[in-house]
Length: 537
Image 1 (cartoon, rainbow, N blue to C red):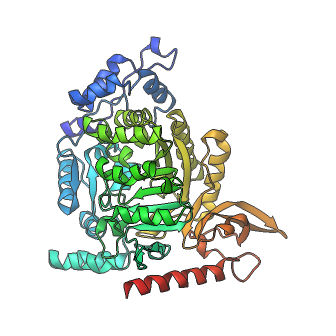
Image 2 (tube, one colour):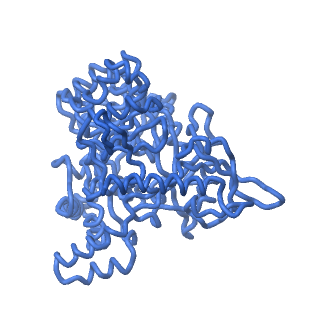
């Protein structure tokens, strides 16, 4: 066996007979070997030990219950040990070189580079080492961060491959960017505005306020990510498009909030909300504590994938200022909700992520997971190319049980949004609905997702509740879980059953010419567009 093959081989420790009598399959010696394998420095080891972040009982129970997902007892050396991040086209080529040196030759490099030029590439050492390189083609994390052949349409791909120069190839990518629909669901219409004390209209260029209770903040410090998801729903932000949302003035946010007492939640997103430094977050949240006119804001949400892509960030003394700020929020009755995006068990079952989760929870952080159900990542096809209902559901059932074991709330699942390379990740709604039903009925009530699977459209978040039979005809039962007019949420309505459609707003109304909300939605969008146009003029 070559050195490369040896490095790829996953060696799982055999459990001694005396240990097979119970689930305690990870002991203190194993923990030391785990810490060594992950290359933790003394500072991180001291934090893990002093704060009891990796109890062997937790690791043992997870390893024994989910050996097919857990990586605690793997001994294969990691392939990526030097740089923390690999960025852009040059970073992608560096990653390919490391793989090549270890006997792994990716195919279709030029086609993958087209995707990188259109959407960018960024991967952390942690995310790269999370991939099972013995079977990387079917690995969910590989699909999550590596561009794949067939993502971008054949015409654009051929134009890129046949270009004579690097500049010509880049121009093909730039031209294609215009077609990637970066602001699906009319997001530009969600920009809030208010009349300031001088009687002037102020627009918040880095905010969205589509639903009464929740205001989104795209802060200037959160415009990057720890790794880029290939299905990114916000590629306009990480790509730096001209019309990206970016909030520079924090005072403007507080002025808006004082005029909008219906807002209970600030959702800091991006990019990745986890990029915001403690000093910047403090400027947002301390007035919520000290100003009685902001008493209505009860929750601060951080939308971040740091636990999947760079959990080691949380296991450092450098994160102490952020943890101290979380303590202040907890002690003043403000919930800090860490909105993670776990799609597969593999993302969770490594020591760095487990330790980071427990450290956050020790400081009052409430971790919730909301995730898209994406083909090739958290939804799978069988050999015939059809959705594998059982395998896909099993992924989510295992994930939900692991979330419960780690005291993480399973907030929601949602369908692929029609942005980027939607065709690659989407699946028929009928199949997704079958998968969700299996998940929901297989879990105890406390581990189920908090809402039915939904899809974001301009009107709001539209959930598929299930199927109905009306006058002998099968149909989808639909209901809003969020809406531009929140009264729309009170009504269940129906759409014709369709075996192939993958966009909920393309479903046909069951017994009417159009949906009950369509006329009002058109008027709302018209008014918002007119207001935005006045601001731009």
